[in-house]
Length: 231
Ligand code: CA
Image (cartoon, rainbow, N blue to C red; front, side, top):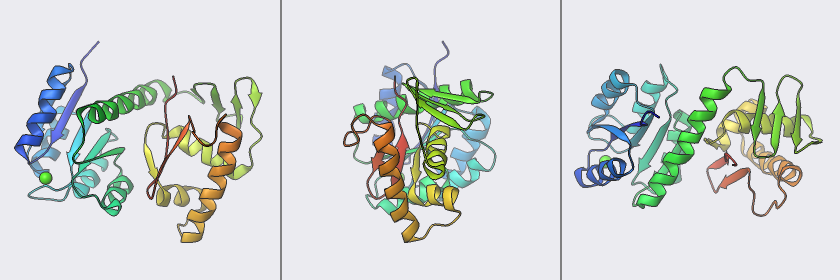
């Protein structure tokens, strides 16, 4: 199997060294960039599998780097942010980032995020022509417009089904409240976010065997939701 290639964008040398040492130990290939402009150049010349991107860069803002990369590529981008404010993460996710890590982070956390993203990559590559999505015992038949859990059909309302399809098509990726409400209702008022919580709760009741410790859809408090890839 070919080694996964990571582009590490980080201006802080100790953090960059920590990341690259970890990647080397775990059999990843990597390139590095110390600012936004060289990150964009490296991303286009090496076409990495995953980008690890620090948001606070000396030249251009990390969110701008995401927007520029997204203008031509869907490569997964994991944001690394020292800023604890949720608004920065949300802005990065809305610009097209897949996931985020907050500094300081542990090596285990970094490796776990990489694994989630690699599974997402595998799904993206396998599923492009597929009209049926499977994840654990969940199956969504996009063409027929129905969903199953094991061999039992899920009886979903149109909104619940739309929500499930949106989460399924973005498996592994954190979707913000704004992104989801835009896709489902075409708007994103506070009342839509409140409705989203209600619909998510009713979808989970049907989907999860234990809605209080959900297996399929993870909550990111104050940020949004993510469908996990279930083995
Ligand atoms: Ca920085």
